[in-house]
Image (cartoon, rainbow, N blue to C red; front, side, top):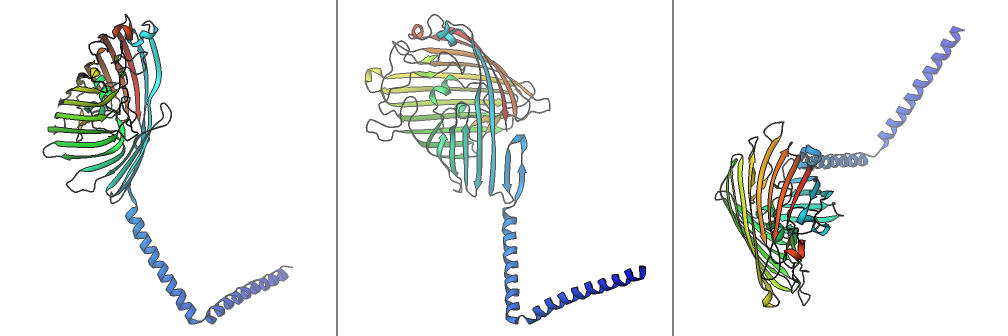
Length: 446
């Protein structure tokens, strides 16, 4: 039995070998039977494919990324040559406010409060050669395009050009990102004078050796009650410029001086009555109101001017601004002038210094230790929106503390005391001509 199985196995093995040899022989014969021209053509195509693959590999190598960063939850990709990049990220700010007196005069001055997302923003930005772009969206009160900027940096030794929905160069504090401001709310001056982001085109340039920087721009109107069109349905424009000088701009030591101006065509529209809140976001009453006790009126144009000062010496800093708004009304009897100022003093208990940027603004410091950084500050703020017969003037004193856990997380607490005066006080707040507020914020950048 075993002999027969062995014989049978040998027979099958021989058959398999014979079959494989037969197939190989057929393939070899078929190949030998191909015309030499076909083989030569195939070799040529293979060489061409090799060259294409090599060329493609070189291009991919040029475009390959040298860095991918996901620090803090965002994403940044940069090419090896640094000419191309893409980044996405955002910020989340959650605020809690409690307030009384003038802030809540509509409810008999009783204590009111609110918890709300102040900013929920995400952005995408990138660059390609001399061009870069940034799109910033806000979702705190429905989807809104906050910024849509296209920028060109190709002029060697010349200005940078930007266009789209961009920030106007008005007020140092208004130009400082909400991620880096010292107080939870900006001053009444900044919120009255700055339209923040508007569609337009601007040019700016910074001279590192001297510390000089200029910026000029033309923007579509549509701020402070204007619609952006005049009586003839023609585009109403605003013209804005800013000049800053930082003769000292070192780490931990800064001296900044600035001057800005803006001419704004109001197109005969009524000037908005409510200039600014009393530096608390969700309140029942806006304390700065030029029409309180009177009426709004149509305006031909506005001229606004402001001066800036900032100094940093180690952990201490001082920042101040003064600005004035001249109003040319349709009826000259309503011509008016309004002004305001603020002074902010800050001190880092843990030894950090405010960080100065070449565009004449400040950003947050990096904590010196893993325990984070502590900052205390005080601010005095005033804005006068009164005339002989109407309007209010508000004074707000703020003390606050900020805790920077790291570059991404920040916690803020402010206590505010306000006073309201002027001919429109009774009409606006009744007998509640003072108020107090506490504001809190948790901020995360990603």
